[in-house]
Length: 247
Image (cartoon, rainbow, N blue to C red; front, side, top):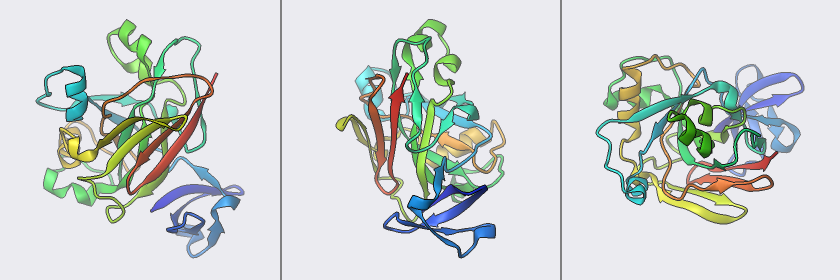
Protein backbone atom coordinates (compact mmCIF):
# COMPACT_ATOMS: atom_id res chain seq x y z
CA UNK A 1 0.00 0.00 0.00
CA UNK A 2 1.34 3.42 -0.88
CA UNK A 3 0.30 7.06 -0.91
CA UNK A 4 1.26 10.61 -1.75
CA UNK A 5 2.63 12.84 0.98
CA UNK A 6 4.15 16.23 1.73
CA UNK A 7 7.02 16.89 4.12
CA UNK A 8 8.04 20.54 4.44
CA UNK A 9 7.97 21.63 0.76
CA UNK A 10 8.62 18.21 -0.75
CA UNK A 11 5.84 16.09 -2.29
CA UNK A 12 6.67 12.42 -2.60
CA UNK A 13 5.21 8.92 -2.86
CA UNK A 14 5.85 6.45 -0.08
CA UNK A 15 5.00 2.94 1.06
CA UNK A 16 2.72 2.68 4.11
CA UNK A 17 3.45 -0.01 6.68
CA UNK A 18 0.80 -2.50 7.81
CA UNK A 19 0.07 -0.56 10.98
CA UNK A 20 -0.34 2.68 9.01
CA UNK A 21 2.08 4.42 11.37
CA UNK A 22 5.17 4.87 9.18
CA UNK A 23 5.90 5.74 5.56
CA UNK A 24 9.02 4.75 3.63
CA UNK A 25 9.77 7.24 0.88
CA UNK A 26 10.13 6.45 -2.79
CA UNK A 27 12.20 8.26 -5.43
CA UNK A 28 14.36 11.05 -4.00
CA UNK A 29 13.06 10.16 -0.54
CA UNK A 30 14.05 6.52 -1.03
CA UNK A 31 14.77 4.74 2.27
CA UNK A 32 13.77 7.76 4.37
CA UNK A 33 11.24 6.70 7.01
CA UNK A 34 8.64 9.14 8.32
CA UNK A 35 6.06 8.90 11.07
CA UNK A 36 2.68 9.23 9.37
CA UNK A 37 1.64 11.74 12.03
CA UNK A 38 4.56 14.02 11.09
CA UNK A 39 3.74 14.39 7.39
CA UNK A 40 0.78 15.67 5.39
CA UNK A 41 -1.31 13.02 3.67
CA UNK A 42 -2.28 14.27 0.20
CA UNK A 43 -4.84 12.85 -2.23
CA UNK A 44 -3.02 9.71 -3.41
CA UNK A 45 -3.08 10.76 -7.08
CA UNK A 46 -3.21 13.92 -9.17
CA UNK A 47 -5.13 12.67 -12.23
CA UNK A 48 -5.54 14.28 -15.62
CA UNK A 49 -9.14 13.02 -15.54
CA UNK A 50 -11.61 10.96 -13.54
CA UNK A 51 -13.74 8.54 -15.55
CA UNK A 52 -16.87 7.41 -13.71
CA UNK A 53 -19.23 4.55 -14.46
CA UNK A 54 -22.97 4.80 -13.87
CA UNK A 55 -25.30 1.94 -12.91
CA UNK A 56 -22.62 -0.74 -12.55
CA UNK A 57 -23.87 -2.81 -9.59
CA UNK A 58 -26.42 -5.56 -10.10
CA UNK A 59 -28.02 -4.87 -6.70
CA UNK A 60 -28.22 -1.12 -7.45
CA UNK A 61 -30.00 -1.78 -10.76
CA UNK A 62 -32.41 -4.08 -8.92
CA UNK A 63 -33.01 -1.38 -6.30
CA UNK A 64 -33.96 1.12 -9.00
CA UNK A 65 -35.93 -1.38 -11.08
CA UNK A 66 -33.77 -0.67 -14.12
CA UNK A 67 -32.61 -2.95 -16.90
CA UNK A 68 -28.98 -4.05 -16.89
CA UNK A 69 -27.03 -1.90 -19.40
CA UNK A 70 -25.41 -3.73 -22.30
CA UNK A 71 -22.34 -1.50 -22.23
CA UNK A 72 -20.79 0.79 -19.59
CA UNK A 73 -22.32 4.22 -19.10
CA UNK A 74 -19.43 6.61 -18.52
CA UNK A 75 -19.04 10.28 -17.63
CA UNK A 76 -16.21 12.54 -16.46
CA UNK A 77 -15.46 14.48 -13.29
CA UNK A 78 -12.80 17.22 -13.41
CA UNK A 79 -9.52 16.80 -11.55
CA UNK A 80 -10.32 20.08 -9.74
CA UNK A 81 -12.97 18.19 -7.73
CA UNK A 82 -10.35 15.99 -6.00
CA UNK A 83 -9.84 16.13 -2.23
CA UNK A 84 -8.08 13.70 0.10
CA UNK A 85 -8.81 11.87 3.30
CA UNK A 86 -10.05 14.15 6.13
CA UNK A 87 -10.54 17.10 3.74
CA UNK A 88 -13.92 18.82 3.73
CA UNK A 89 -16.78 18.27 1.27
CA UNK A 90 -18.24 21.74 0.67
CA UNK A 91 -22.03 21.82 0.19
CA UNK A 92 -22.60 24.25 -2.70
CA UNK A 93 -25.15 27.01 -2.12
CA UNK A 94 -26.74 26.28 -5.51
CA UNK A 95 -27.87 22.80 -4.42
CA UNK A 96 -30.37 21.71 -1.80
CA UNK A 97 -29.63 17.99 -2.10
CA UNK A 98 -26.21 16.37 -2.28
CA UNK A 99 -25.60 12.64 -1.95
CA UNK A 100 -22.71 10.24 -1.27
CA UNK A 101 -21.80 7.40 -3.65
CA UNK A 102 -19.25 4.85 -2.40
CA UNK A 103 -17.08 3.50 -5.21
CA UNK A 104 -13.97 1.45 -5.89
CA UNK A 105 -11.41 3.62 -7.68
CA UNK A 106 -8.92 2.09 -10.10
CA UNK A 107 -5.67 4.05 -10.48
CA UNK A 108 -3.91 3.85 -13.84
CA UNK A 109 -0.15 3.31 -13.64
CA UNK A 110 1.07 3.95 -17.18
CA UNK A 111 0.00 5.71 -20.36
CA UNK A 112 -2.11 3.32 -22.39
CA UNK A 113 -4.55 3.03 -25.27
CA UNK A 114 -6.53 0.08 -26.72
CA UNK A 115 -5.77 -2.20 -23.77
CA UNK A 116 -7.22 -5.70 -24.00
CA UNK A 117 -9.07 -7.03 -20.97
CA UNK A 118 -6.54 -9.80 -20.39
CA UNK A 119 -3.67 -7.27 -20.27
CA UNK A 120 -5.13 -4.71 -17.86
CA UNK A 121 -2.99 -5.81 -14.90
CA UNK A 122 -0.04 -4.29 -16.73
CA UNK A 123 -1.51 -0.78 -16.62
CA UNK A 124 -3.03 -0.67 -13.11
CA UNK A 125 -1.10 1.04 -10.31
CA UNK A 126 -3.63 0.04 -7.66
CA UNK A 127 -7.01 0.64 -6.07
CA UNK A 128 -8.47 3.24 -3.73
CA UNK A 129 -11.70 4.44 -2.11
CA UNK A 130 -13.72 7.02 -4.03
CA UNK A 131 -16.82 9.09 -3.20
CA UNK A 132 -18.74 10.33 -6.25
CA UNK A 133 -20.50 13.21 -4.46
CA UNK A 134 -23.48 14.38 -6.51
CA UNK A 135 -25.88 17.31 -6.40
CA UNK A 136 -28.92 15.19 -7.15
CA UNK A 137 -31.35 18.09 -7.59
CA UNK A 138 -29.10 19.71 -10.20
CA UNK A 139 -28.63 16.40 -11.96
CA UNK A 140 -32.41 16.11 -12.34
CA UNK A 141 -32.76 19.75 -13.43
CA UNK A 142 -30.08 19.58 -16.11
CA UNK A 143 -30.87 16.17 -17.60
CA UNK A 144 -27.12 15.57 -17.88
CA UNK A 145 -24.57 15.14 -15.17
CA UNK A 146 -21.67 17.55 -15.58
CA UNK A 147 -22.72 20.36 -13.24
CA UNK A 148 -24.05 17.99 -10.57
CA UNK A 149 -20.83 15.98 -10.43
CA UNK A 150 -18.18 18.67 -10.90
CA UNK A 151 -18.16 21.01 -7.91
CA UNK A 152 -14.86 21.49 -6.11
CA UNK A 153 -14.52 18.85 -3.33
CA UNK A 154 -16.98 16.45 -5.02
CA UNK A 155 -14.34 13.73 -5.57
CA UNK A 156 -12.93 12.57 -2.23
CA UNK A 157 -10.32 9.85 -2.83
CA UNK A 158 -7.94 7.87 -0.63
CA UNK A 159 -6.60 7.47 1.88
CA UNK A 160 -3.99 5.35 0.11
CA UNK A 161 -3.55 3.13 -2.94
CA UNK A 162 -3.76 -0.63 -2.41
CA UNK A 163 -1.88 -2.97 -4.72
CA UNK A 164 -3.27 -6.16 -6.25
CA UNK A 165 -1.73 -8.08 -3.34
CA UNK A 166 -3.74 -6.05 -0.82
CA UNK A 167 -7.23 -6.57 -2.22
CA UNK A 168 -9.36 -9.41 -3.56
CA UNK A 169 -10.73 -7.41 -6.46
CA UNK A 170 -13.52 -9.90 -7.20
CA UNK A 171 -14.77 -10.24 -3.61
CA UNK A 172 -14.18 -7.06 -1.60
CA UNK A 173 -16.81 -5.60 0.72
CA UNK A 174 -17.67 -1.96 0.02
CA UNK A 175 -19.54 0.19 2.54
CA UNK A 176 -20.58 3.76 3.19
CA UNK A 177 -21.32 5.06 6.67
CA UNK A 178 -22.81 8.44 7.53
CA UNK A 179 -22.26 9.48 11.15
CA UNK A 180 -21.41 5.85 11.95
CA UNK A 181 -24.59 4.40 10.43
CA UNK A 182 -24.10 1.98 7.52
CA UNK A 183 -26.00 3.22 4.47
CA UNK A 184 -24.38 1.17 1.68
CA UNK A 185 -23.18 -2.41 2.07
CA UNK A 186 -22.29 -4.48 -0.97
CA UNK A 187 -19.44 -6.37 -2.60
CA UNK A 188 -17.39 -5.96 -5.77
CA UNK A 189 -18.72 -9.38 -6.83
CA UNK A 190 -21.91 -7.47 -7.74
CA UNK A 191 -20.18 -5.35 -10.39
CA UNK A 192 -21.89 -5.67 -13.76
CA UNK A 193 -18.78 -4.71 -15.73
CA UNK A 194 -15.55 -5.72 -14.02
CA UNK A 195 -12.32 -3.74 -13.99
CA UNK A 196 -10.72 -5.46 -17.04
CA UNK A 197 -13.85 -4.86 -19.15
CA UNK A 198 -14.01 -1.21 -18.06
CA UNK A 199 -10.36 -0.52 -18.92
CA UNK A 200 -10.70 -2.15 -22.33
CA UNK A 201 -13.90 -0.18 -23.04
CA UNK A 202 -12.57 3.18 -21.83
CA UNK A 203 -9.11 2.88 -23.35
CA UNK A 204 -10.68 2.29 -26.76
CA UNK A 205 -12.20 5.78 -26.41
CA UNK A 206 -9.47 7.81 -24.74
CA UNK A 207 -5.81 7.60 -23.83
CA UNK A 208 -5.37 6.88 -20.14
CA UNK A 209 -2.55 8.65 -18.32
CA UNK A 210 -0.66 7.67 -15.14
CA UNK A 211 -2.71 8.72 -12.13
CA UNK A 212 -6.06 8.73 -13.93
CA UNK A 213 -8.90 7.28 -11.88
CA UNK A 214 -11.69 5.01 -13.05
CA UNK A 215 -14.54 5.12 -10.51
CA UNK A 216 -16.35 1.85 -11.03
CA UNK A 217 -19.90 2.71 -9.91
CA UNK A 218 -21.85 2.69 -6.67
CA UNK A 219 -23.94 -0.01 -4.95
CA UNK A 220 -27.49 0.52 -3.61
CA UNK A 221 -28.32 2.80 -0.72
CA UNK A 222 -27.20 6.25 -1.90
CA UNK A 223 -28.68 9.08 0.13
CA UNK A 224 -28.64 12.71 1.16
CA UNK A 225 -25.91 14.28 3.28
CA UNK A 226 -25.94 17.54 5.24
CA UNK A 227 -23.49 20.00 6.72
CA UNK A 228 -21.85 18.42 9.77
CA UNK A 229 -22.18 14.84 8.53
CA UNK A 230 -19.13 12.56 8.53
CA UNK A 231 -19.07 10.32 5.44
CA UNK A 232 -16.88 7.20 5.48
CA UNK A 233 -16.19 4.97 2.49
CA UNK A 234 -14.65 1.63 3.50
CA UNK A 235 -13.41 -1.00 1.07
CA UNK A 236 -11.97 -4.29 2.28
CA UNK A 237 -8.25 -4.44 1.61
CA UNK A 238 -7.92 -0.67 1.12
CA UNK A 239 -9.11 1.09 4.26
CA UNK A 240 -11.43 3.96 5.08
CA UNK A 241 -11.85 7.35 3.43
CA UNK A 242 -13.41 9.90 5.80
CA UNK A 243 -14.69 13.41 5.01
CA UNK A 244 -16.87 15.94 6.82
CA UNK A 245 -19.52 17.93 4.99
CA UNK A 246 -19.41 21.70 5.58
CA UNK A 247 -21.29 24.74 4.29
